[in-house]
Length: 348
Image (cartoon, rainbow, N blue to C red; front, side, top):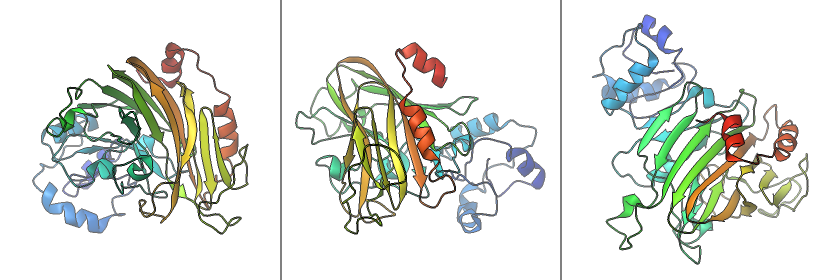
């Protein structure tokens, strides 16, 4: 859906069929024009200079025109929005630096139920809080990490798969005295949920590097409280998915189930270990204390492929306990080759 406030009803009827939502310089997963009247009012001045669009023009042409005019820096495919987890996949176009912009604009997905986290510092994963993103580190002590902030290019396929290429160290040339600045390139594919009731989306990464790197992929940070345990972050370790609250961290999979719902990841391709992080307090917009499920590993120089299912089911959702069957099914999925993975996920 392309949301503009200076088009007539005929244009709106045509644009409502579009799969992309753009509003001024923001992208909003909004199924109706009237849901954000105040935001529309605030954006009216910014977008009033855009020529009214003809209903005969395709949404892809409209989006291309808007991007060339640099009216937007965020893209979101509405087919990627899951009603179960109230989340949407997103990618970012390069623009001027802003405070905490990597957290506010450049994560892989945002959720109105889980919110997002902002780093409290730059020393260790607990301070970096890499929720809904892929963090990389070349630090032998694994204390300094970098995440996606800018993209070289962004594409959306007909099936709603968002592809972006980014270089995590190239943008820090002015501050980095090391010769290793642009030698790491990451291409990320964000595959939307198959249906609005599917409790996960899929991420695929191709990492080209000339040096050894540590990787940490985060899911949604979730509230650490539980009705079973009154003390925050005292969730017990459990060994299977179910109604019980707790945390599970094993090879290739990890999840947290608490008062906030369920958040977890399953590695589909690439050797990684599931770990939960008790990230710093007051780093999340929704909860004062959260736990972050992550998949962590190490990659060697060359080309490495990683793929994962990212689950997110908020507390109180009608599918809150239906996620278990999805989790068990995806946990048993085995992808033995890159070709099988790419063919099944249909990302190329």
